[in-house]
Length: 89
Image (cartoon, rainbow, N blue to C red; front, side, top):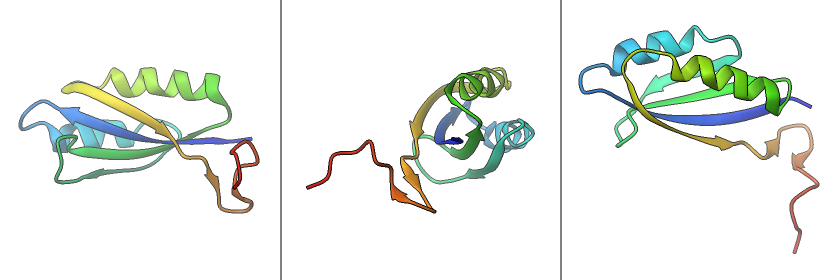
């Protein structure tokens, strides 16, 4: 099953545009946008599995001008709703 994740990226001052452009070129990148927050770039990436996601994240980290990133897995599946691994109430 494909894995989708949100990547919050903190670029160096004045580098948000360059970082967004470079990150957008990474295979599997669905979107990369500049936003107004402490992490100035938000990206959505998709990979075949967690190992592939880790490899793609190495590519993201290699982009010049990145100070820090935080990655959060998207646990919703538009075809099935919330994944079955989550507790239900």
